[in-house]
Length: 112
Length: 114
View 1: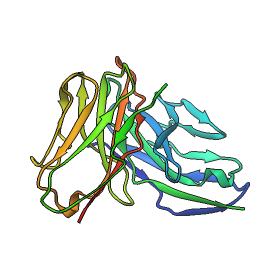
View 2: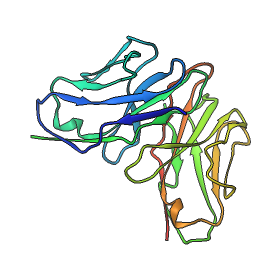
View 3: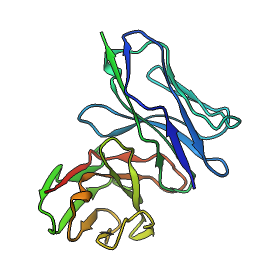
């Protein structure tokens, strides 16, 4: 079946450090890929997405590129801020309103 | 524009009791999803509605769990004879049809079974 594997957290970084959170997937065909973020005390929010191979999703300084050859969708940010502290979830789905399949999440803590 | 809302935000119940969790999707969204998120895990799919009908209920863990969406808008997730293992955050999401694959999530209901 379809699955998503994320690097285990927690990840602790100093402000302005470079961030990478690895995500790989197992799926048939061509899923759409997502990163969702869950800030403390808040619900899941879509951070960025990519719907086909080589697409790059970006938002709020975060980027991720859909790499079909390595079945990966790693999340990166060049300079993290304290306000980026949250739990990040990688997920996949297919078109047609199918359910999302999530990874276990990676907790990021950014310290000043 | 209101987002997805869920009530109650917190529910504490005793083992063996019946609970209902409510979800109000974004107006006009025809697809509605229920997920369950256990501590330290990602959300796991329970059931998906397209309109009034359950298009996929393969994620429901057993027959104690049931969900309805009688008018194609509000949905209720019902859990009978609750067990301590049912304790989790129950998330609802909606998306616009057709073909849209972005889901918008509610804040969740934290269920605690004592």
